[in-house]
Length: 265
Image (tube, rainbow, N blue to C red; front, side, top):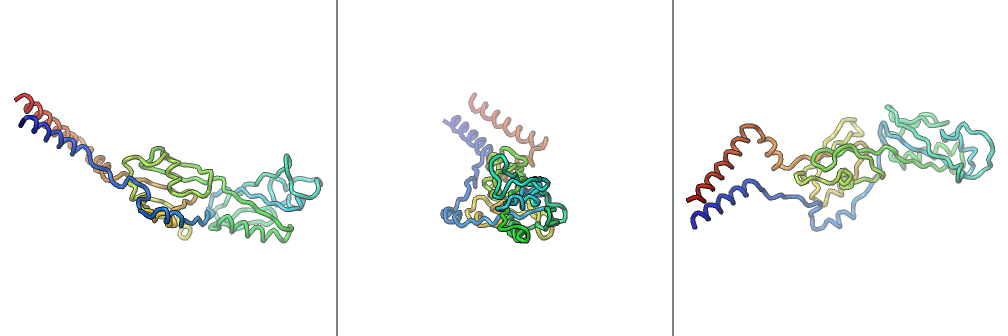
């Protein structure tokens, strides 16, 4: 009886030292997370240096509007009034926000847009264009919305989103979700400050439902998410030296020898 009891004790000790329960593996663990999620507000992207903006100007008189679209500014002819359709439809023109925060727009010249939302730039352009056009309509899309997700995710790297309204959970989904060893309570968001131009590091806890009310819940272009490993993995990696390996393996060997001796008595 003592022999089997010894076997049981040794096996239990080995299992206990090898395995440790995982905590905080649930997203939005608060009981009132549905109420919290319903309060999330999307305030829109802020235009940054290097952004590629697809802009299309349209109006009732398609001849008058041609000089304001790069793709049509050199066209000649009189196809009549009215918006273009079908094979004659005009595609948006691309503008890259330069280092001083502006784009060079046909006829209007330099238009400062850094820090604006798309809605603000749209309103600004339409206001300027009213000097030349009747009821101008401007549409703007961002063609290079990229983020980076690094660390304890299943598919790290730079990700391109097909939508500009991207929250932190959607970004993690683009990276294949977090790994088992991820620390969900201390996700690092690296974002360039619009005021100082320097990178800021913000800690986010994905286990709290209140994260949806954070100003960092929705991502901006060029954001970086770093998912650090949990404490168990950090300790395991830090202790992974040659001497520690010998101590660990020696302990296992000693346990096996003790087990064999107990069985042979």
